[in-house]
Image (cartoon, rainbow, N blue to C red):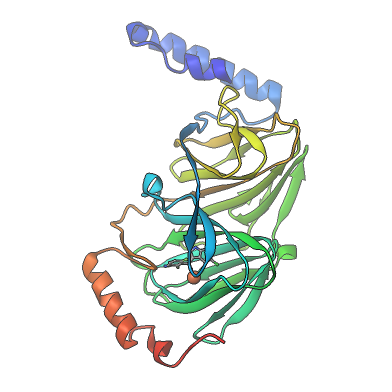
Length: 324
Ligand code: FJE
Ligand code: FE
């Protein structure tokens, strides 16, 4: 792999020889894909940026490792936030609103009990997913169900045409999440497709959300739509991402990937490696965010604050509802 990367970048003084290099590169790439029986990608995605998601306090006494959404990791269109959260009673995320985007909650341990202002409630437990489209407005609480509760919450922006749609939930209990396994690599497909299995989730903003567990000594080559923005978050263990010569990455780091048609990963360590690969089609629209409200312009944010304050345009129940 490292040879492949080196020769694909000929020095400028040899630019007259580019056709030669290009041919040579093509022949090696095709030879590799035949001999390895795995996808040596045309344009492998490499690690552009590596950021540690440090712990911070959020909500009411909860602790989150914020990956996407921190100052160094804004503008990963269409993603607004990724929190690796840990919450124990009496801490939690009491009554708060959302508008203009989707929240995806994937539980790793324990449970989160949610209640919204339309009477929707339930508990998301380890392995379960709640895909919530806030659309024009949701007010809800998200509180711990057990002593220790951990998970990931991803915020995905909605396009201007979807920001004011009716709120909607897609709930996937753990058993219903498509799973596949090959040569020591297990994938849970929360959105998109991997190893020939497909998620039932409808993504208004086209999104891939894969959870991988890789045994020591295993490798995996995941295809990803070429123009989508994509990142990795390492949950546990240590992995090599992008090229065989990349330095190993340990838990709680976000890796922002370059564009390309796929990602290669190796677990060269002696322990299991667990991480998520999250990718999405960029919306390429202006983003105006004020906390839990995400619109396109500042005037739409002002309108949203009024709607919330006076209980209009989706926030009607605000005046009558409190979580129990
Ligand atoms: C929020 C502060 C918050 N990350 N991870 C401000 F904490 C929240 C919020 C969450 C949240 C909830 C869960 Cl279950 C998991 C989270 C932030 O609820 F929405 C705003 N605006
Ligand atoms: Fe919320």
